[in-house]
Length: 233
Ligand SMILES: NC(=O)c1ccc[n+]([C@@H]2O[C@H](COP(=O)([O-])OP(=O)(O)OC[C@H]3O[C@@H](n4cnc5c(N)ncnc54)[C@H](O)[C@@H]3O)[C@@H](O)[C@H]2O)c1
Image 1 (cartoon, rainbow, N blue to C red):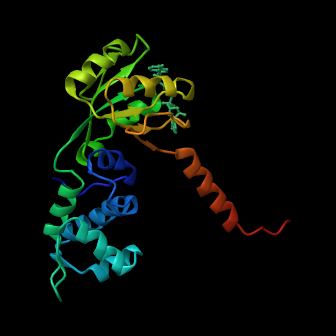
Image 2: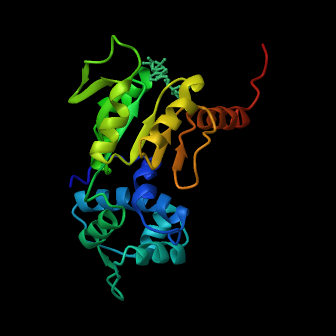
């Protein structure tokens, strides 16, 4: 696996769909990709060992927490020398199931859906978009990269036949709930939702909302808080 890529921690949809049981704390799941990114950089720079204390300092996480998080992956550090970076990377990959793939279907091949389909990083982080769907007949039949765009009528039969567990939802808000219903009815168990809508789904279905607008609003709010008033004239 290529270690030199940027992982969006929101790719947790794959993890949450595949890591068994509620016993793994979600904050740990969110931190592990950060550790992985940092460890990959160290490995690429030629470093072989790392201590939890060093990771804690660089990543701004308490060292006890880093040790606990790493222990969950099953990788044990050694006294004095710490962890072997390559072992740690392999342990995190295995734990997050990045050494296997979840196939995903995307619905809504507009600006955002197309951008997601063109982004190669999801494949490396465990989720592969194998087909996309759109109700616009002019889009069905297209290919975005290697991925076919298919008519909505094919969604259920293909999802069932291919045992698709992950759905990526990039339709406008007004179509989001109906699309989620279709996904759930077709056996999808995890939805990565980009529409700014709270989806109503059964308890067994995991939804991860990617709230870009909230994130942007926070950024701009923080920016305005740091602005000092300029003298007039
Ligand atoms: N573009 C962004 O940067 C951005 C950022 C954050 C969130 N979002 C959200 O992501 C979603 C998509 O945004 P966009 O800008 O890509 O929109 P878009 O209008 O460019 O694309 C939407 C696509 O969904 C398809 N579609 C609409 N209704 C459908 C249905 N019932 N079944 C199947 N396909 C359907 C349309 O044909 C179109 O191809 C929206 O909910 C938006 O709020 C977008």
